[in-house]
Image (cartoon, rainbow, N blue to C red):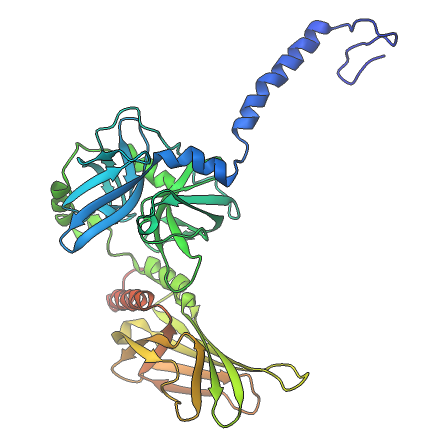
Length: 423
């Protein structure tokens, strides 16, 4: 009879016809196996064992103290990728390998200010190299691993997933991950399940857990292909300081600024619990900054407050929502400020703070006249909506750094809108 491969076999156990063809097929199958195995996903432990030898600690002294970051080796002769902010202010620097060997001489081969990347060189020989992947083919939801030296704890490994691929607001993409990072992780690699570098750990948002951002490795590939002659740290600082703002890419366009604000404003979330004095009621409060429209020089932004009180007995929780929408002509804004606030400071006589985020940071945007149109609405039908003009609005953040960055971005957008920049 014939098998599905067309090779004839005798029912009495005699030799197969077409034996040479069968051996060829079996040999071809065996040749395929190593390729498939090489592409198989590794466990986190296997990734750590493979990648850790190529991850380094970069330490240096600046005018304001010691600085520590991470990096990873991309060539056997000692080329290392890191963040520019790790080395930018260093007067002296050294690189420590995973095996403890220290190199005291560090030169700079390339920098990219806008994307916060740098390539440095040590006098290495036959060093362990981290294989570079392709960040253009990565998919959201994939398992990823971060390696580095958070707080100086070299050899630290954390795992998570690729949470998103986002616009940075500065003309390039960033990878978002929930793999834990801390100061000292900057410059270290984010690697995929095959142990290949997908990007360079760059920054995190302090306002929430698990919002960590990575510069894709494909930008590094472009930088590596444009290396310049080695320069000292001092020469690098002079070179960076001498660039014009347009060369530095430090002034994003209006659309980039508004897109960045659209992404960052919803990160303004403040949550706390208070008690209503005299009523024996515990109330959970959530303040959510919101951007309904940020596509032009007229923005609609504001805040949604949700107050939740437990229901009595078997009754459902009592939820009250108030929504404040402000239509803002950005070109008419004249003030952008951030103030710290006690989350119960306006009602201490009737409310007491119980738990959660006691302090918040209010971003105030103001104009010289009543140019802002405010629309207040409430979930209770007993309270009618209100619409009126005002000269000031505020939204609340739990993170001061984020609040001030948003304030700076609004100032920049306002300046561009006054200039009537082409959108």
